[in-house]
Image 1 (cartoon, helix red, strand yellow):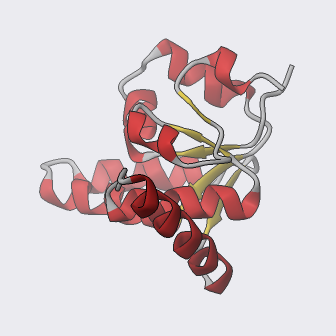
Image 2 (cartoon, one colour):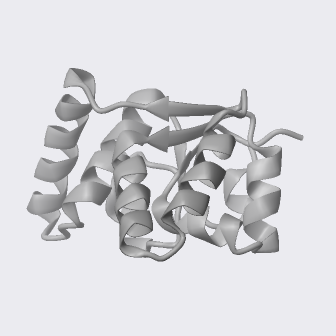
Length: 138
């Protein structure tokens, strides 16, 4: 059974690359895997700070070449979702990091669930968030 469309957070990609079995299974069963351009920026900046930049970039490029993986850019529509999410979280007194606001906005814009280990995503109304298989089953 295929899972919902999954938008991959940076920490979920890292868990997958470390060989975490649960992460591998979630990605294996996802119909579509979205990668926000914001997550790409986070990954590439982490690679640049490390000692295996070329190898990490090569592995990421191979991952992105999968027909099930799609890069989701930030655009005007994303900005509209960002504004609504930002305002709702500010009203609740529950801010989250700016990059994660963009990731949440991208997921909402495209109807994707966010695969992350960051609990603060759960503060975003209407966003499906998870880090286990059960949370992504249709």
